[in-house]
Amino acid sequence: MEIVSVSPVPVTGTESMRIALVAEFDGTDFSGFQLQPRDRSVQQVLEEAIFEVYGVRRRIFGCSRTDAGVHARMHVSHVDVPFSIPDDKIPLALNAHLPEDVCILRAATVASDFHARFDTIGKTYVYRIHNARIRPCIDRRNTAHVPGFLDIEAMRGAALHMVGTKDYTAFSARPDGDRVVNPIRTIRRVEVARFEGSEIIGITVEGESFLYNMVRIIAGTLVYVGQGKIPADRIEVLFEKRDRRLAGKTMPACGLTLESVKYSSEGYVSSPF
Image (cartoon, rainbow, N blue to C red; front, top):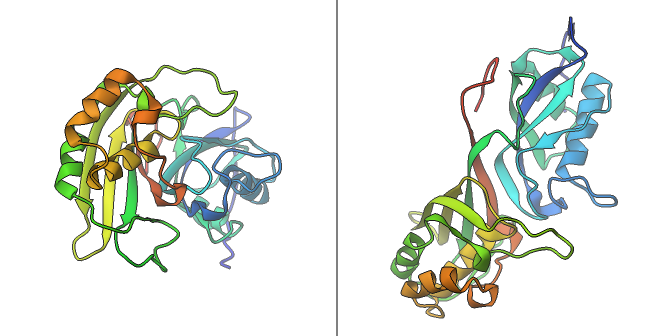
């Protein structure tokens, strides 16, 4: 473990300053990002690292909750801290107190009203499928195994119908007791591609915001199209019927990764995004 020496600079004229953190994590052994009463979460280990470095208990706010088992290559959060550390030193200082399955890639001092969740203008997810007869070993933690032939061209054709501002009720699942939310969402891009020289198929979904399990259900629906269970030209019917039972299954969490988060350039003292 690398020990990082930092020289804190007290914040003057205010009680705290706000920093944004870009984290990467393997979600396999986490219950998700959000704090859970009895389960291990990404938020929990980040807040513990903040305490070790800054000596205060502070709440961290994330750009996305992410479900149990979902990974992230770029997850942004913000936290108010009592003193200043140079932005380039913050990742090293925090990583010295973080477990191996999560790390801080970059950090930035941001405006006091910056919010990691509410200031997002878009997120990109990639769902990875290991499409081979034999189940994966090395890739088992970040792909879902789907044996058998998948018609990539049919999946691409179906993906075109999923783009736009629409009612995505058929592509969402509502947790027990969760409040009803507006099902209208704007999806800018849905692409299906096989990684060159690989048995992995990637489904990329870019949008402004998402319903619960939405990307995993989109992926499951496209898999059904690839298997011939749902015709590609029937996707519009799913939007019209608004019936979850007509769409594909919810794919396993392990295949889903939050790849990137977009923000406007306003509000940053310095920005790593």
